[in-house]
Image 1 (cartoon, rainbow, N blue to C red):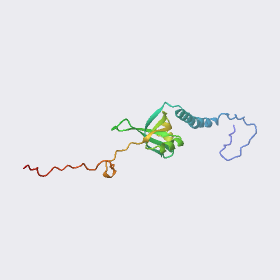
Image 2 (cartoon, helix red, strand yellow):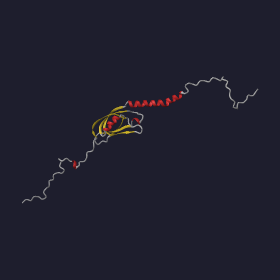
Image 3 (cartoon, rainbow, N blue to C red):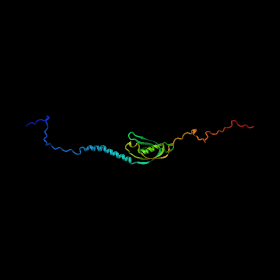
Image 4 (cartoon, helix red, strand yellow):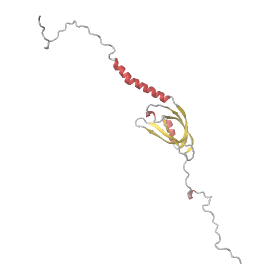
Length: 185
């Protein structure tokens, strides 16, 4: 038997043209990337958008609160929102309860800012489970404002003599008793 030559040297290979047919590439081989992007990026973003839409468009509760507007300011690092405080006064010599709220409408925020220090009635909606603070720091969103009173009550100033009306005597009339008793003859 003849020994075959070893093929360890760099000999050019000869193509006879009668090679085995190659199998075609499967058509779904590149689809896994699209499916991965769909499940990892698009689907969570769509779910988040749906969550935000439901949380902001359907209210859990609605109502009105009245009190004195203490402050309203624009807050936030990236998402600026209008945040405010309403002092709910229950009666004299009682500490007020603070009602914190968010305003999404700039025209309502301007009205509230103009009524700061006055007694107002706020109409609000409560939205539970809003996903981020980008939509407001509280769950109470004010929809309308109405002025119902005058300015906030202030402390009564002390009576100063210069502010005393002129009809009131500043000193009581003095009746001086005689210094010596009358003598009888």
